[in-house]
Length: 199
Image (cartoon, rainbow, N blue to C red):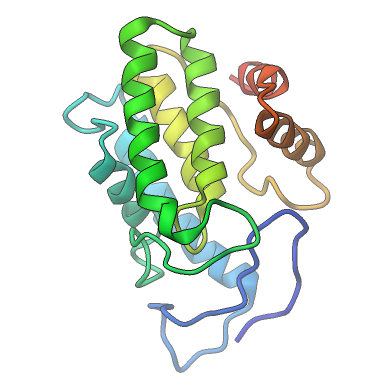
């Protein structure tokens, strides 16, 4: 089990079924986050240590799912599996696959038509990925790495998010949550500015 601390505006981790760690041990949430961070570091090195090619990171439907598995698959059996349950945020479970495919198609359209600059595309990709919330957990961290891979692939440096972003003591927390909520209303200005300022 773990402690029952909940973080506002984060998907709660109430269910530890699917945990791949030693099941004879009792884990705190901080210990689980530690193992998740180790797993995420492997994916980060793979995609951000040099400019990722289109072959390595094709931004296809399948690759978006694969990335989540690469980030969390050492810790959770449900990593890279689209959720079948409703969460407090995100689209309805039955819409997850369709919305993720629409995001892939929209990204291709934005690139082909030069609809936005690279930072705005990364911000819109980031926001839509969070808004869909395709997985049981890890959606925020997945969406931020997704956007960073896009930035790196397009010749920009990744955004330097503090990955303890939802901790109450993190000064970026309120700005980040507010930026995502404004983007929900169609105003990407603050998220673009936040993403750009942290480059």
